[in-house]
Amino acid sequence: MRGRLLAVISLSGLLLAAGMQNRYDSTVDYFGDRSTFVSLPSGKSLKVLSFGYRNLAADLLFIWSIQFYSTYYLTNRFDYLERVYDTITDITPPYKEPYIIGALIMAFEAKDIPMALRLLEKGSRNLPDEWFFDHEAGFYCYKYLNDLPKAEDYYSRAAMKPDAPSFLKRMKAHMVYLQDDPKVAYQMWIDIYDHARDRLERDAAFNHLYQIKAEIDLPPLQEKIARFRDKFRRFPATLAELVSRGMATVIPQDFSGNDYRYDPILGMVKAQRVYKWKRR
Image (cartoon, rainbow, N blue to C red):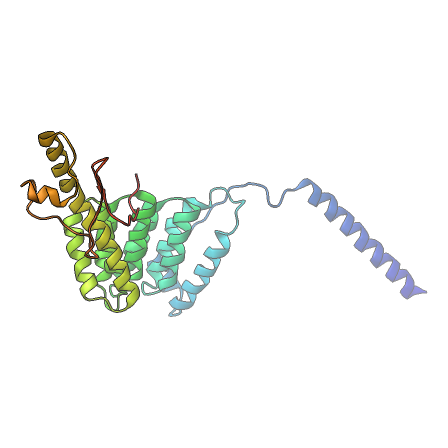
């Protein structure tokens, strides 16, 4: 009888506690927007406080940072973003993952590309043989800042690192092309084409060379057609007529060795294929 009474009292207590908790929960929005405050010692101080376990300290802080920046209801969490990842990378400068994850959060969550670039540059300084940081920085400059010269510089630095993949040279050459410097870009792509390691790389170089050669060849050829019309009051019947009439010494061909397409009615010349890589 006594045991049954204790069970009833215990159950009643649990029900009362559950009711009180439910009532409290209904008045509190646990996931509502709120601000927070984060205070971290410097990386130098944490090295000392870790008592020789600085790798463990950096791991724990890195794991916490991922959880913290996944807490979306903390509205001011980005106020501490750079400090948090600077601290982690100060504790263990060769620790690669915090640079990568931190830069991703800065770029895609906080929408702060300059901050992401600062962290990636720090990674490049602390891991000078690692190409990935400069590659990521180049991508951010190209994709989000439209800063082609800066993107070219980052890709150039990445391409010079040990064991850098060959596509980095292609990205550098593409940045030069996008900056409307076709003659320099053409020579860069010729070098890539001549030293291609596989068919994919050679085909990529071929496509760029085809487009760039057309961009170099067609404007002066179009000017010669316009001068022909001014002189003879008609368009040339064929491109060869430009040579026979003394308006050109030679008619260029595309990178495949084929003639460009010519419309004698409109007086327009164009390549058989067009690759639209430039933003208009």
